[in-house]
Every structure is written in C-alpha cells, then in structure tokens.
Length: 232
Image (cartoon, rainbow, N blue to C red; front, side, top):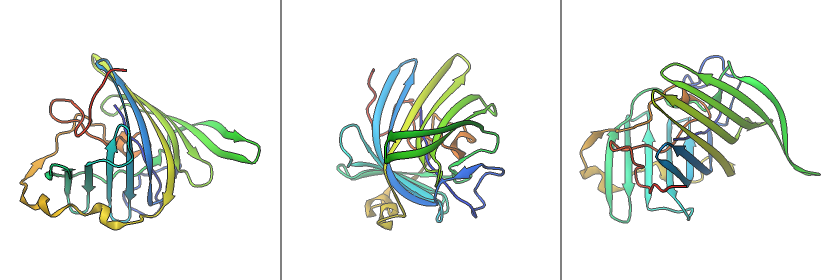
C-alpha cells in the first residue's frame, strides 16, 4: 500500500532528531501507485495538510482532480470523517495517536543530490534512504526539495510475515498555506452519524511520521475505502 507528506519546526509532534521537515501548511496533488500480491492500484488525491491545527483532508479519484469522496482527519478534535457528497453519507470515526509529522528521520542515509530538468528549468533535490523495523520491515527512498524539504517522490516497501506491499508517491502542483480552511469542515449531515472506530489495515505508526505516510485507509475487508481496486 502506500501514503506520504511534509515539514515542521516548532510543533511537539515533530519526531526527535529529524533531518528536515516540510512546511506546516501546504496543499497539492499526490499520485500514488500501490502493488501487493493481489494486484495494484493507481489514484490521485488533492491533499490539504495543516500541522498548525493538527489535521489533514483529501479527496480522491482515479481520473479527475475533484471527487465526491473525501476524508478529514482531525487529531486535535479526535474525530475523522469519510464523506460521500453525492450520496450524502458520512462515517465518523475516532482519531488517536500522534499527528503525523512529515519529516525525514534523523537516522536516514544521505543518498546524494539530484537535479530534475535541465538548463535554467531545474529542481534541486536530495535523496534519503531509511528503514524501520519497529513492527515490520519498512524501507523508504524519499526525494525532497533541497530548499524547503518538500516531498517530490517516495517509494516504500513494507514486508510482513507471508506478504509484502509497495507504493510510490509523486507530488505536484504544491502550494504553501491553506487556500480555504473550510476544507476541514464536515458537512452538516455528518452530525446524524454515530461515531465508529476507524478500521485501518495499515498500522505502521513510525512510517506515518515520515514521507511514507499513506493518506488513504483500508476498510475492514482490506479493500480501498471510497475507491476502486484494479489489477495492473
């Protein structure tokens, strides 16, 4: 599977001993590809990240930049929402744990500088490699901009007993700040839905603190919530 993100300095949620972190507020598109033994999937998300208020939101669709499916994760309020605006349905769920600090961890290996493009139209980046063996073996190769530590792309492979999955994230059209803070407001019809416990197949907390963060979830049946799954 997959998922990824970006930088803070003064927040307590920032992991100790980080190399660099992305801005505390930003928006942009994330395109990810995930592969596991059952097949693969590609999708695109519009992602709003707000570390100041410890929340993020995204909408996702395979072909368009606008989707009727949306998720809001609010760590300060302890509540999340899965929303389908076409059907006007909303699942609320409990959000717990630390807000994901999108940073390059201090133990990452410097793999060298990389330049994208040529001539005067270039982007200077740095590549890092890091592993995590807390609950399972995770290997992440992350490319970030040299100036702001903004994510450019990441590739993560996770090994579990008897299985594995890998995912790649690519970021584009990233802009600083949050253009419209109402992106984090759930619609009024969410109030009538009882709170449910979040069902997430992905449970690698230390990965969620770095650029390997997946911002989609699996439901209890291990299928993609609000999205389709297709073979590659």
